[in-house]
Image 1 (tube, helix red, strand yellow):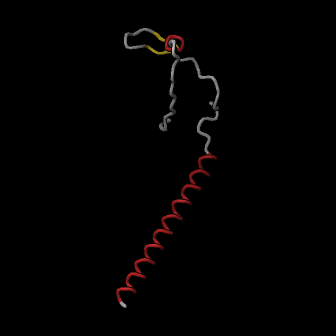
Image 2: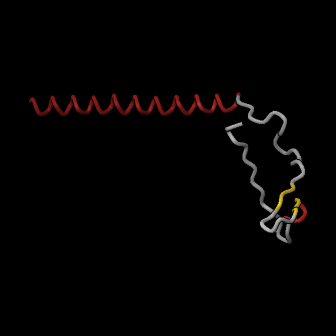
Image 3: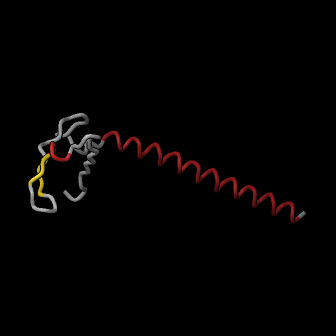
Amino acid sequence: MQQINMRHIMKKQFLNRFSTAWAILLLSGFLSSALAQDYDWAPDFPVGANIPAIEALDQHGQLRNFDDLVGDKGLILFLNRSFDW
C-alpha cells in the first residue's frame, strides 16, 4: 500500500512540475514575441532601404568602395548594429 501511495505522489509531483515548466515556457515565448514587436532598433534605417556609401582601406592601404567589392558572383554583405551605441 505504501509503495503504491508513493508512486502516486511521485507521479503527481512530476505532472505538477512538468505542467509548471510547460506553462513558463509558453508564457516566456509569448512575452518575448510581444516585446520584440514593440522594439524599433533602427528607426532611420528601415528594411529595404539603400545602404550608405561604403569606403574603407584594404590590407594594402588602398581605398576600396562598394563597386570594388562586388565581383562576378555578387557580394554578401552582413550589417550588424552594435548594442554598445
